Structure formats: structure tokens, C-alpha cells
Image (cartoon, rainbow, N blue to C red; front, side, top):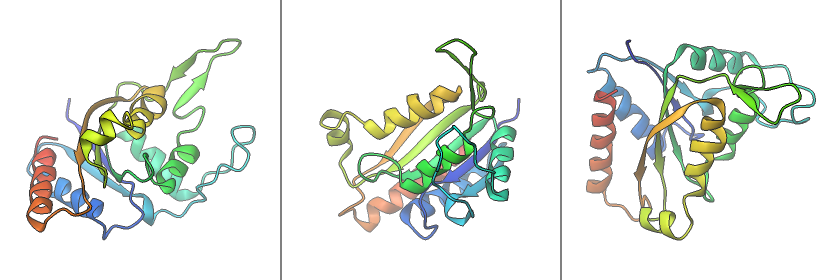
Length: 192
């Protein structure tokens, strides 16, 4: 089956280093067999606040409907985002709150604590930038943002996170190091 990849930029600004990784991945993927589509959360027009929880579902803005359509189309998702305060940016969290809705991403079973994973069969790759060194994030902080994405968001909906690529520490990195990371992102795109 041909891989249908949706790459999602979770950084609010496309001119960030995450934006450069996003573009490098796309450039690499052009040399693969993958059918690739892209989504930049910073370009979407939507309210990231889930005002009433799931008690009353807010109407989806057209951009969120389009995002759901792209997620439904894809069988592989690539998320490129920074780790801020141990996890994803608030824009990305708001995107999950608003787009990964009951009936789309998951469905609770009647009279049961269990749920159906409506996005099952999809895989994901996380490409995460951090100022924290990778070893410190792992051994001292215990990778809270990675666990949130892998288990309590994507895994909850049936998406299997196959790979997590860290680009760290960004703060204080040399131009040579950043070029190396961009080449790595391009190589990852070629493998898509």
C-alpha cells in the first residue's frame, strides 16, 4: 500500500527552525514514493480553546474540517514541533482539543470505561526540537511531552508512534549542527 503522509507543522511560525525542518523533510520526501500533503497549524483560522469541554461540541471552522479530512486521508502522520515547557505549544494542544473529537478520533462505549480508537491503522513520526539536552529530558524529566503525544493523544486514538526524532539542544547550537539536523530531516523525508 502506498504511504499517504500528512506532515503537520506544530510551531506557530513557519520561519522557525521547526519550519526549516518541515521544509527539509518535504524536500526529501519529493524523492520518495510517498504521496505527501502538508498542514501548518499557524496558517489555520480556528479558536484553539475548547470552551465547553466535550459537553457541547463547538462547530468546526472550515480549516479544522479540512484538517480532519487530511487526517482521514493519511495513513502516516509526521508532526514537527518544538518542546516548550516540557510539551507541545499551546496552538498544537488546542488543535488536538478541537480536531480530535469524539466521533472522529475516538468513541466512548456505552456503559463502559473503554473506547474505540477511530484513527487506528495509522502511524506517526514525531520530530521535536528542544533547548533541553536529550539526555536531560529523558533521565531527569522522564520525557513528559513524548509520553503525552505517544500514549495519551495519538495512542488513545489508535495512531501508533513509530519514531521520535529529537533535535536538541537548539539553544547554543552551531550553524554546522543545524545544517546537520536539516540534512537528517531531509533523509527522514526520503525514507517516507
